[in-house]
Length: 346
Image 1: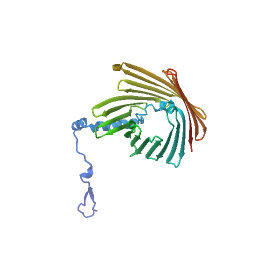
Image 2 (image 1 turned 90 degrees about the vertical axis):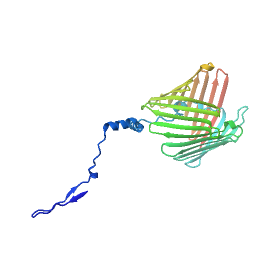
Image 3 (image 1 turned 60 degrees about the vertical axis):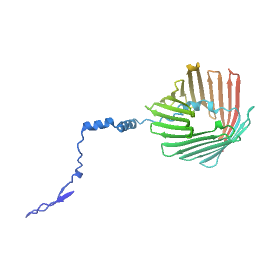
């Protein structure tokens, strides 16, 4: 900024005139529009920024994890909750962050009884879970949030009696505003370059539709390798309905439909088709199930096209105390399974 005063004359008052500098005039050099467009055309960052700005304007939701594509129907069907024989679970909350659990499983004919002890520690950024049974089999899981969006996960299993069941899985997951990316390495050995490597990506296209893909690379031995690609689609027109479709290696097609009929009733169906012409295998399975919540109990039931019928009843006797009874009847094989369980939390 420069200033000067003109020469004073008789009968006049001197005034100061301020002249801005060139830098303060904020004069930008002229840019050739043709050159700017040519630069943007060959600049990949221009397309990335434009796409990112368009996604931010849409405000799409996060589609969830690829592994939990059909999580609603998994919570409806009793497949992962069935009990065979007798089982008792006792959980003790020792602090707001730490919990200990004892599990006793009554042995079946040909199978010994089993006792498991587990501990869980959790806070805002960390989750640690480990359990050991009477066979000295140890399982552990750890999750740590590096940032709000990035998580590191690890799972390990050691079985002294059977080395083939021992495994180590390392995982990294990034959760964006409208997508989730995940990479896994299972039993990876840098010595002979063996292991299983999985990469998945799930992206919201609209507020109701999400699509994704998963790439699996397997190298069980140095000279044996195999890869496959899975494509997935998740469509949720309303909060009460979810449709998922997934293809695996072009030979397996699976689809599921979940519907929340009422606040207390949920229903779902699963379809899986296997087509391997080289082996002459063409199979299909269909499962339908329902879940109903009563005032103090929950009933889950399902049936498939192979004549298998399953049912699980969870009765809440008191706060923190539940009684479970499950049964499975296979009409084609003539096999039956029955189990009872107790859950106590204090």
